[in-house]
Length: 349
Image (cartoon, rainbow, N blue to C red; front, side):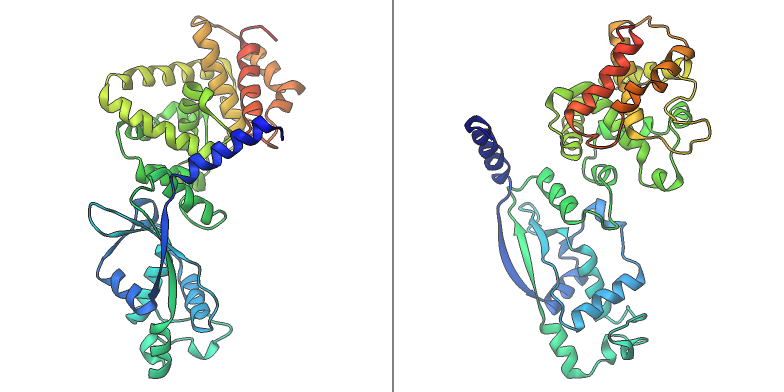
């Protein structure tokens, strides 16, 4: 890394570090449970509907009882209400409150099998006091920590866990006219036909994710830095503001989307699918076809290609190389697959 790259790296680190200011505090289990019960904490929408199942709750309580370290709980200080918003740890806190108020009956414990079938009040008094006095450390983010940094923290901490995915998180925290537009367009019948998703992906709002990528990459790719989730987050936040200022933008963006869909239906025999019987839509394939087609149509609105031509493009070794999944989100790979389809449709390849 040369000196200029080192300088840019340092500037990048410092710029992001300024977004996060915090202090620490110790809480007893008893206090935490009381505050949850009294609704003194707020839970963001993107976390509220995701709850642990009973086995996971019981395993967490077992970990607490045998003295295993409990991960930090992250809060954000909402200066307007004076309440702490739970950035990460809502499942732990809600499970504690449920157990201490005897609404969680333990089951399936392996280390403490004698406690199976019991609730908190069944513990001896001395053990109940020890549990209540256990402490958990909280990290409190200051009111200056913006929503993007808080969501980024939540996603980083929960990588690989059963929690809200980026599309669900964005839907919860980025409410606004552009997000409403994405939600509406995700229900388009032709879009669903051309880009099928599994039942699990449907629940996880995969169509909204594909749409977010289509608009963000086709609109603002120059601002992309190999950071998919933060990039799309910033884009939707910006577009919410623009749609608020200029509601007529919705018609323009809808026309752009529908024009692309109609072209793909006419020109690509399988739509965005990889095979005739496919039940899912690979993201790299969707991005290349959707954004590549949109880009080509910007250059030539009267573009007309046959399905034989597009089949030849998609079956080529060069195209398959472009959509390989390794390093797929790197800007070079992203531009490569989009430009390949665009250039091929325009006859430049």
